[in-house]
Image 1 (cartoon, one colour):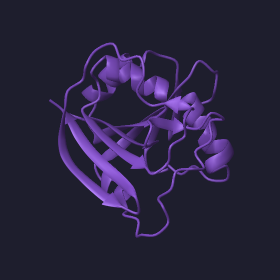
Image 2 (tube, helix red, strand yellow; image 1 turned 135 degrees about the vertical axis):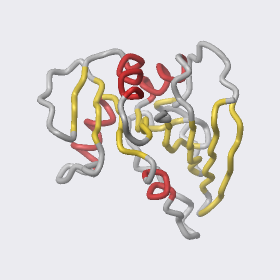
Image 3 (cartoon, helix red, strand yellow; image 1 turned 120 degrees about the vertical axis):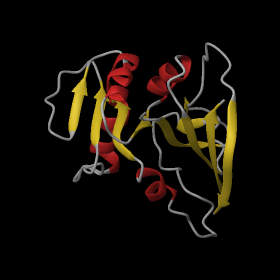
Image 4 (cartoon, helix red, strand yellow; image 1 turned 60 degrees about the vertical axis):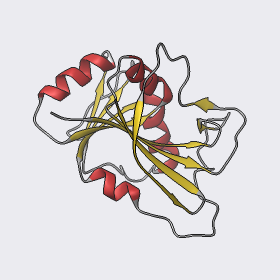
Length: 175
């Protein structure tokens, strides 16, 4: 069965964006080699889920000239009326219902790309099987917190941890 994986970076104090919504701080300490954990991760993925704010930030700030996830089917959860394409599908439905239907389809794993609201809904309903979190060596103090308002405890098992360029990759599965 298809697995649901969160692959995301956060500051040491738990934020995925600063107080202005910026992610310009997403980098190591600058004195070491970076590992390509992204390429390793996406080998097992063919579908991406993201919220509207994440999608909007990608197409307006991070990569306005080119859709960077062209190798995947991307579902954007939104209340906005948008026209879907073959690769980008705008859906206005409950994330849990979408996950349930996608898990029934054949395919590789499903990547939860962001944002925090979508992640929290899926955490609260125990839909995330794997947590791949990169800790960035930055303290933001405020911003968009990745995990907040949890409805219950989620116990995890550490699969591995790697350190490079001041960053730490943590890989967990639910136990």
